[in-house]
Each structure stands twice: as C-alpha cells, then as structure tokens.
Image: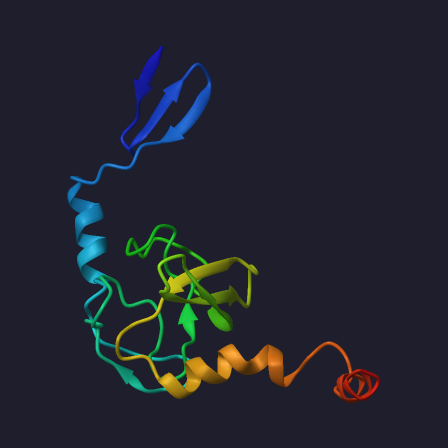
Length: 150
C-alpha cells in the first residue's frame, strides 16, 4: 500500500522514503537562493569569488586557495547539511587528461573529487600536485645512497 503525507514522504509497506520533487516550488526556491552562479566570499582565504567559473558548470571551490565548503549531496544541489570546510588534499588526473582536485571535509571526512576551474591558480595547483614529491614517506638521503650503490 502506498500512502503520502504532506511532507513529500511516501510510505510503502512500513518503509519511509523521501521523494524529491524537482518541480516542487520550495525546492526551486532553495536552488535559486543557493545558485551555483552566485558570488561568495571564501571562508578560508576571505577572497571574493565570482560565481560563474570558466570550464565548469558549478563553482565548488575557491580559485585562489582551492578550499571548498561541503554544500552538495549531488553536484550543484546545495542540499548538504554539513557545511564544513573541505581541504584540498591532492590532485588527480582523469582518463582524458583533465585535472581534478581531491577535497576532504574537515568535519565528516567525506572525500570528493571536483573538476578544476579555468580560473584556478596554477601555482597552487602545481604546489598541491608536487606535495607528495616534496614530502616523501622516506628519508631523501636513502635515494642518494641507492644511486651511489649502482
């Protein structure tokens, strides 16, 4: 048996499922208020960030420091309740050669991968990519000894 209540929930045989109505007026108002193309101030570096990034549909990180805020459940929906800062921890490369930024939420530890924007700082991207080489998990003198033994 299927029954509905006034809060967009569907009850099926004792199981409660939340139904998302994308045509629902309340959802559309929330989406417009948290529109991805709105300018904002970065919570990490305090820079003003333009909302419409070149090369991607949704702005999800600061182009100067690459930090983000945990806002989305799905890209662009702005429906996450966490709202904590997300630290850029690595750079990854997709199959087509596109660079991606790996973010980790400081509160819930969720890891997300986001496309880089066309206006992202190249210097910060390169320093993030070079971080593992600059801080290896072993002493660098071990490399010198290994090279001299050959």
